[in-house]
Image 1 (cartoon, rainbow, N blue to C red):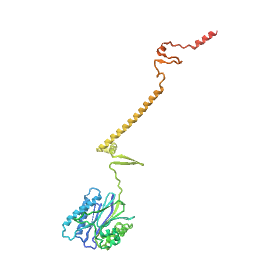
Image 2 (image 1 turned 90 degrees about the vertical axis):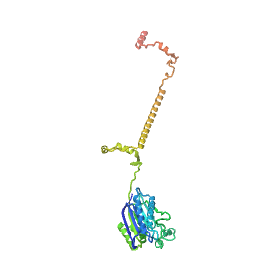
Image 3 (image 1 turned 90 degrees about the horizontal axis):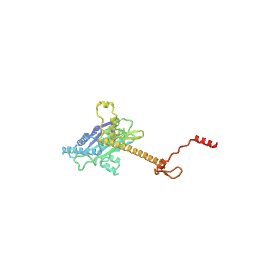
Image 4 (image 1 turned 180 degrees about the vertical axis):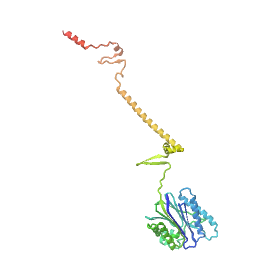
Length: 383
């Protein structure tokens, strides 16, 4: 977020009889400087009307300003200026004004201008970073390399504008809009009318605002002193010292938790369930309802559980299949030979002919001889 540390405002008629400049601000976010065109009818009315109209438009905004809002604000100001012009039909020439404004957004500064009122972006360690380009005849000649910057400062037609804010324009007034994204704490924005730039060169303005050894108040006083001594016009402006705050943006769709070097993303739909399971005792006794899980979250939970069950069932089926295969192989290896033959016949151990099982069962079984009786018989035979 871009905010201001210091704000200094000044507006003086100088050697003129009346002050046709107008300065205004809204909520320390919008800063406007207008310079009523000298020699035109009711220049002070034009500058005041445009400044007040821009303020009214920005006050009505309920969201952060964008580039398109600046042009819309100017269109609104021109319509208000049309009504003012209708009340001054006796004026010999149309009223008109320049305008330069700065809008502090979330991470940048939007700059809009019409005419030769300027905005400077200055950093003490680097000097001039940005300056608006005048909408004037001499600036066009400088761009075309017809004259130099130094010659343009003293040219007799330096006040002849190529673009300004006037009522009932023949074609829409287009605001030139720039966005300053490189903003650091301590940077200066200086908005001013041509009464200031008539009295001071760009180098003098930058040197004054880049001076480390004087306060911001002394800097603005030096500018005012230079204008009082050398300016031939009204001189007005804003000096803003900026602060760039770092704001962490939490995404609405997912919350990210970093554990060591491995980021773990936790879907936001699961966060209410975690909060519900870990309610504190204070929440239980407060009578507050725990946050409800959205329909989308419930569907995701069901799908997650279903996938887990399918995975477990798949592995169980694989294990059962492997075990059944192992039992079948064991049976094939351990089957005796006689179980594969005809059960009605059994081959004899001596290699003889096979006999039916019924005949073998009918034959008498020879009883084993006693070994002691056999020995006694052999002794008697020897005698």
